[in-house]
Image 1 (cartoon, rainbow, N blue to C red):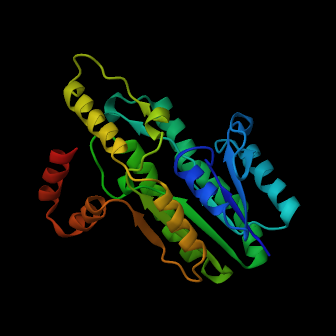
Image 2 (image 1 turned 90 degrees about the horizontal axis):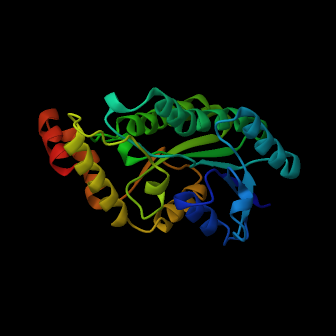
Length: 266
């Protein structure tokens, strides 16, 4: 029997790479999501409408899949947006909007699918977090906070669902060559601000790192591997050697030494 897999944010970037790669295997029925699916015709998988900030949209999306297949085997919480800026100068409206998409959206999707997974005594939830959720860098405080929160929720939820044959896994990608910078919200650079020069320099470095990013097919292949493991690890990191090494350094270097290194790089 085919596995039913739902990948949020499936119309672009890492989500599109995952959905496209998995759809090449006959053993899966793939659903990707987009706010307006009609804007993305001719994809090699089923693309359906979903607004992760709307509980009604989430309910409709999940219930339609359940009514058609009677189950949902895998949920990949990938939909998300970027946000940059000095925290002091980032509006509360944009901060709240960010958390609604990057944190509350995945939470509400998990709450909706868990009853069906418990009923089937089987399920896999993969939350796409970020290396930025493990290593805080200047002018990404809100983004890092959202991804870090989703990572710890994954960890604790996996323990809560231990008796139901449900695995909850987090995957933290580094910089990949996607269009994330186009959809990312940048707090305006304010002329004369105390943060102006440092923020502008940091933005330039962020955009340069995205251009140097690897092909997101690497993440897609990791997701495939996780789906096919009977007992997957609970945390995975997918990035360059330096990105992975940075996480290790954080645990071994003195805090001030690590902060000095981060400030030099970012």
